[in-house]
Length: 234
Image (cartoon, rainbow, N blue to C red; front, side, top):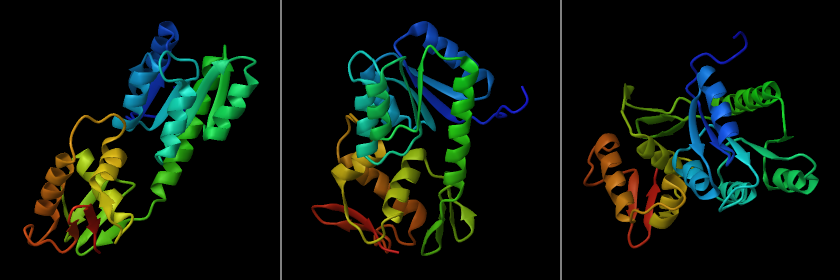
């Protein structure tokens, strides 16, 4: 098992309608310490790709419902940079060209050797880790957001945030002074096909203010823009 990641707990989403292939890949990834999510069709794959925020997606092109290329296109149009390895039947050159053109990070034709797929997945994850670890910290007031570590401190003390709270805070902090509508926040943070309402955003902003503002009722940083949405003033 040398050279394999040790208890990484990174999440890999496999979107593949061939059950035996899907289950076989899942078993091999789990043995190597990865958390695995599975989708058997395009609709389920699209939802998990946005809602679960995996660290990598193994994506079949030919799927019931949305095709793999449609999922990939939607991800890139919405600014999701998760690495994607696409799978397609051997000889489908047009699919390979289109997939790479839409922003796929790698391509593998079926049938393939398991060892080659595992090597490509691990290479993509190493590259993604390196890029993530180089992300700069974000700061406002006495709050520091360590993006790579997904942690937040206030006055030097750790502040526990949920995954959604952290993603919402990062969205605002990466573009200080920019006003985000509630709908754009829902799309960016909650993802595709979220069934909640814009009121969800309001509730999460209230929670962030309680944790990060000196006076939550009169915030200095997490500002409401009436009838529009929210912005972060550093």
